[in-house]
Image (cartoon, rainbow, N blue to C red):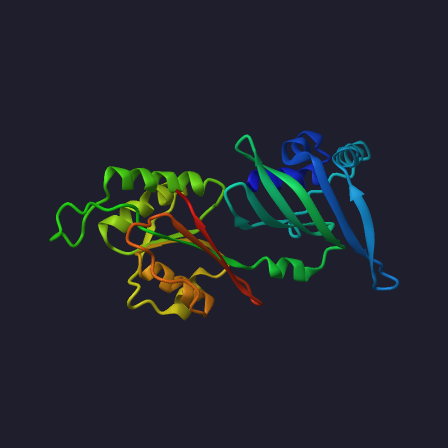
Length: 270
């Protein structure tokens, strides 16, 4: 997904129509508001169609208006569902909120609403923290006396499947408890992101320190049927989710924290 979003920015920064075609759906619907510097009022700008977007990029290239600026440029994936997703992008023109959908397995941009010109606060708002919280995959329950079982073959497959689910997410940190079942669930995703696993004890986790250590990052946390919703609730500062049923290894909790809000989404990924 980040590739699609960066292709979108490059299309306008570099006048690259090929990158725009790789990012935009032909039924693109884009419109926005531009702040009049004289009146301070925001004025509506009519829809930019797919064809007009390509013409704009071509015009940028022909007139040599290619932009190399990077300080105003940023990409942030907000939420991902099975077939749709949302993102926030900043560029030299301002701020875009973007809706995407999958087309033959590839994320493509469907709709954009934007605001300009660029303001420094847009960048500051990008400093959000996103947590993906899951329970460990299916564990071996053949030996009831074993307090630290490994994953079953089904569980190992689910652990691998999480890497596909998270294919468009770039994790900065992966947390796991020290049990075999959680470590083995976390390992494929940690490996896919070329990072190690940070171990934590949910019983002794100091929430304020945890939030401070992970601020501005994208984090995967692997826990248990009781600790995963418990930590999700703690991050939200409200009791929103109940303990996970023992037969359910598919819940994915996504929590986003900004300076102004804490939001969450619960998905079930079979």
